[in-house]
Length: 336
Image: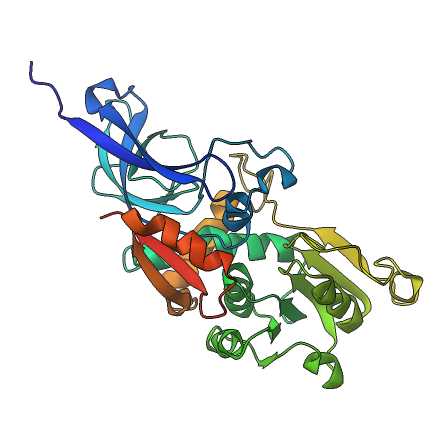
């Protein structure tokens, strides 16, 4: 009986700060279990927050994160190339998203978090769906309602995706950037107005919800300053990461008594696979919504892709991100 050829999987492994290596492992499709499938990666996207923190040597700052050596990446778009005999949910040739690391292919169980990518949505656009989901989670955790005034501070790739999806969800969006290029990209993503630091408060901006994706204490200070009385602040960043203690009280009563603000750590969505009457929005249903927005032309996140790298140059992208280049918005790796 003929056997399937051996496939070589290239994968990125991080051994410590700036010690990123490409390693190989072999896979025979004959070893697929009945409910397993093999997915060949097309593109994966760089997270300039979590991924970069891991590259800097800060992996364990995120609770429950693995220590080194460890995989990196969690935004993978690929095509199903083989399925086990009992797989019923997917078929060969189908494009899927998975929160899978930077690697040229992987084996998954059909019940894993795999989300079909609709026809008409490019793999590049789809690779940003999970980063966009983090913004959706930040809004949902603070009970966002359509029509509220949402201000996004910190316009890295997650912040810019949050601007785009908040606009698609019916928010009146203000963006605060730390560079002119990011300000212009926010306007392309649908922000009603976009400012540089300090300008929003001077212009009288008040937010029902502030989504803060930045790590600096100055961004934290701007968040509490522009939130309205009774406002809510969603933190997708790590306030004070790699900075000394601030010269102000982050919980000063002028904000948390005087303005009755609510703070929320954000970015989490349930991963359980349950009917919507039990849990309305899970990661899967958030991602499905985001991909449908993209299919209908309501989510122009492809315009955020400023850099494209062949997978062999993956380390170059991390080194560029390490410089905190303002010209870098979204970066993707091509594994084709």
